Length: 403
Image (tube, rainbow, N blue to C red; front, side, top):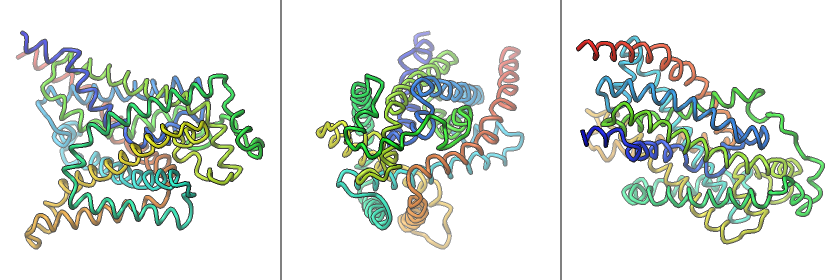
């Protein structure tokens, strides 16, 4: 009885929900780029509400898939999706989504790290500078992938905690600085030339309608399902439900507060960018860093920039290592006998692909590539959970009662 209560406790639910939170709240979230692209552009009040709806939808999908995996006794996503689809061979449909989002995430992290470094050094992240900065990040990745994978993985937990704390500090500082509801006044004091470029909240960056942003964001965040399936293997029915509820609140509220703050600053940031003010040509690329620059909290800017840079690099190394584990065994195993050599080749190919994509820029990757993969996920990941997942769960539960 005690073991059953433990599997269904709020404490275990929080532990599993933290896996989802850690997967979601990486460099893309901490930079503020995704938050602006999908929520903050619609205004302060929508930016508070839409994230809760998006994460609520994801929590429902998550609950369906975790419950389906648990009833079947699965602890990995491959077996889970092979059983979910009408044919086991259709599991490759999820693989396509998963591989694309991982490659896009690495590319976004390379672009984000390069942009963060350029901003911190006071260099415009445009033209040849963008290529040079991204090449510096790639060189660092090659070194870390060869010599420092274990160090990066060991430091990832501490780094995740620190980036969450520093991001929370940025959000609080941004809300306090814009507490009068007129953050643009700071822009006018900073450079009145940009005042003529104040945008309206019309959702023109990614989608013509807010509901698309909500659906697409929830869909591409299904990338959190595989680690959640692995983490929740021993949980009971109640524990699974509690993990999804806590995950919804943790992720939704973090997005909401960040979105609210950045919505206050969005006119300011977009005005700086559109007016082509020196030093702010990429003001909306790493918006949290730009907000700190305008506010002038130098110690927090330095602290946040270093952590954000490390978070992006850590994401790159971790995901590249995931790709190596996934594919090195399938790369000419009979021809290339050395596992290390196969790993280096896979890592090299992945880094080359991601570097090429990274030149598109962080915003293009998060709004376009993530967006298109999100549309794909709506069809091949989200809908199957409802169409086949729910009926199969009911059947399994009925068979369990009969047994």
